[in-house]
Image 1 (cartoon, rainbow, N blue to C red):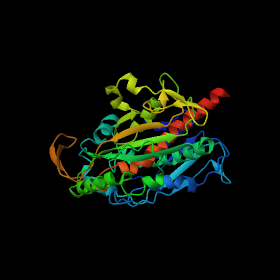
Image 2: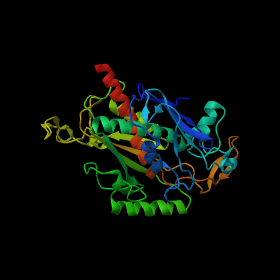
Image 3: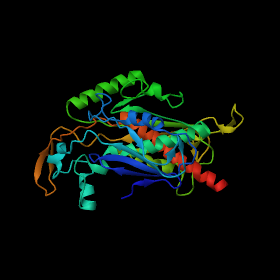
Length: 361
């Protein structure tokens, strides 16, 4: 099983949804970064369950513990061990699903591939696995901000049929994004999204959505053509997040409906004396390499597969049955996915920065 991402900033995650703990090992973090649990915790708190009626009621504080790699408040350059204990485990909620693969879930494919699986909560296929990624990515965020002033913000731009206005150039802050429980900074759209998710939850169903992410103050030259282009590694990182179904950079699929005269980003001298572009249909990437403009991309999340609504399906033996899933599940994953997208972006950028610095050395 592939549980490691990165080349020089390498992150390996561990743990199952209802096991004793989850976490990550970070190998490649530079030495002498001031670091404590308090630097990591805010993103984990934004990801944690039980935040509101929009999320699963599972009660987890998700407090991170640094096990290694830090002494006297500074990183040592050695592997950093990160762990979060699982407190509110209820594997018994999944008893009836031990022999019934949930429709559109990983139950069937994990069982067929490995001949075994963690039936309680989905094990490694559960979004709880992302805790390790978020913790490791929060470290990368801190380092990137201190080195380059890099700022990464993601928000909910769509839920079901409701879309927020384009806010990619508004310089949003995380405080603005977290101002409502759906994490959509367009208040009018947010109200409609909240109403939709509430109604969906009440009928034991689920709904999907789209996140937009903008990363500013990115160095020029990040990306490794031809097979490890910036957009290729971002796409890999985003599509590794549970429930993702689509990724697009810049103009994305809409760009296929434009003419080159509309889509091209002309160059101009910026106020800070650097050469940049007057538009950003490229999403901050040209030829697989960052061009210094903000990275702008979107990720589509499907409706969560585990729902309480009765579904006609089959057991592993092919016998017809009706499944009404028990347990605690999100009716819509996108509000809690915001910090996951931000920190996964940081992991990709951190690795590229270290690879570029290594080449120059």
